[in-house]
Image (cartoon, rainbow, N blue to C red; front, side, top):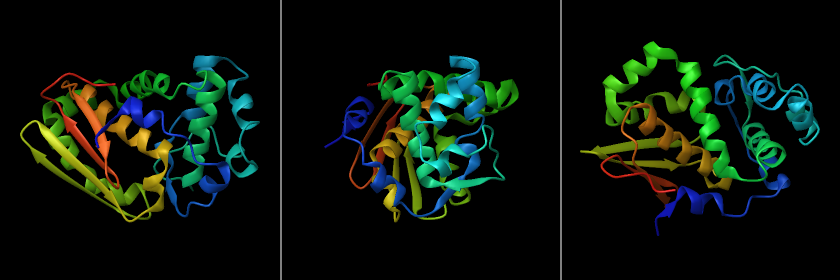
Length: 203
């Protein structure tokens, strides 16, 4: 059964113990300027409030990370959940517009223009090429057919995590929007994401 992003976001979270048990690391730019963005958006104590909510190894992560950094996979997930709970009233969907704004600012005008020229299909096809540089485990494949795409993720326990699934659906929706072709993103299976930029977004 296909689930909308809203339905994905309503799935109960894993416990911290389950999340901490996930193996592997991810590239630091999955978090990017996370701490600086928090302070800019929510005030000078925003970062401190988040650090108090997460385990010590996550609390010590720098506020700015690049593609040269590596962090445990659980760090991205626990920080995301803490931000949603502390600053967004527990509403995971409220995170999406913040991701849009931060990503748009981080890309800059030139790269946004290049993304629009490439289009959603071309941009999605590049995903498997960079996926292995971001994640240590698992495989990602993309099939594009006209104005639809099927994204599959296999071989990593991380891909079953409810928060990771919402973030991946967000990332797909975000790519469509920044490429100038907003559409519908749903997910099902083990984890398959379906993007259709021939119709309006479904939340």
